[in-house]
Length: 69
Image (tube, rainbow, N blue to C red):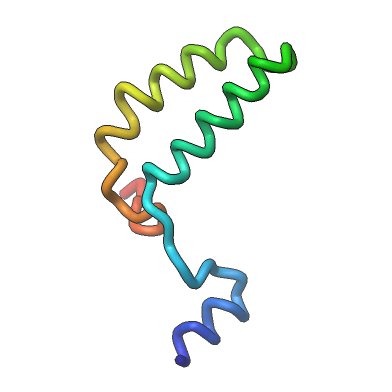
């Protein structure tokens, strides 16, 4: 209970999501922008990179456990 209170007070998400769920949302957002002719052409490359390389590597990790160190 104390940990949930601490996280809420410091604006840290109480529930962590998997990277694959966040990647799926990012791909959907980029594709929606492309479909509405608002996105940039490079978004197609971003979608491909997320789908082919980034998501297979990080997909099973919780988003809050990914660290640059």
